[in-house]
Image (tube, rainbow, N blue to C red; front, side):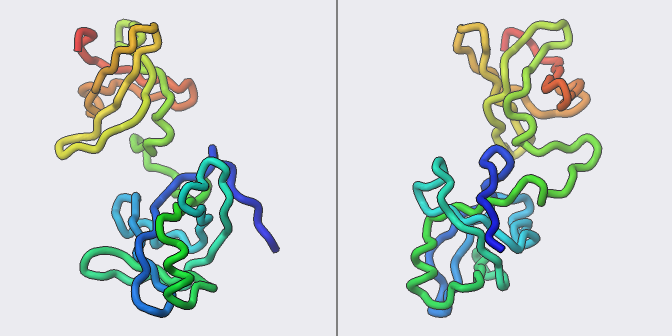
Length: 182
């Protein structure tokens, strides 16, 4: 049975292919999952060639096996049996449907679910909308873009109970206790 490509809004890029590894069709994989080897729990990938993500022209591929190397992960896909075929995957994106992800535990969130949420001060003042999150050593940071035409960007630390007072994904609102002048 031929499967349709995933809806881009309902899929997540979990990695990309690096260069070929060996002569039997193995490829290096750059994983965007946390932990890094989290990508190995997904056994079917939608592979989008380099430069094709917007048009989402790609194909479903099954992972035959994975192996850990000293400096990363390599994967062997079904039907990719030689170095030339593996080289053709270099730079391709690896997508997984959102429904394949485990449901986050209470108080945990996928970044993709926070992007686009409004950020509101406990007083009710609208700070803006989450554009992205940044991973830092100490804690993650919300990048919040104002929506009042001011083009102001705020960086708000993702610290539950101290800075982040409430996250309501149903309403798409994050309430924060953060100095409005920052």
